[in-house]
Image (cartoon, rainbow, N blue to C red):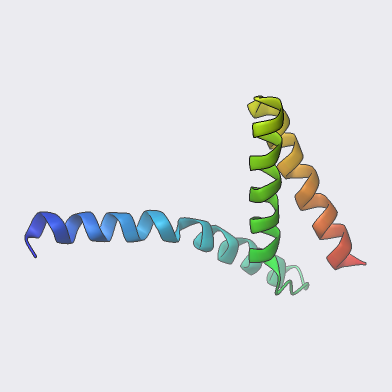
Length: 81
């Protein structure tokens, strides 16, 4: 592998890992608050799916983001209950 390929591989690996790193950061904040949420990745995947479906149905970024937030809130309420 050339140096350019190695750099490209590292950059792509970091870009692909970012959603998991955000979930990890959110879980750290939750743990500091005293609540453990082992399903945080599932909440992110569910919100991503609903966002995709909402965007394809409405062609509106604002409505898709609203759907993502509402899905995250609903999952959080479910975990909290």
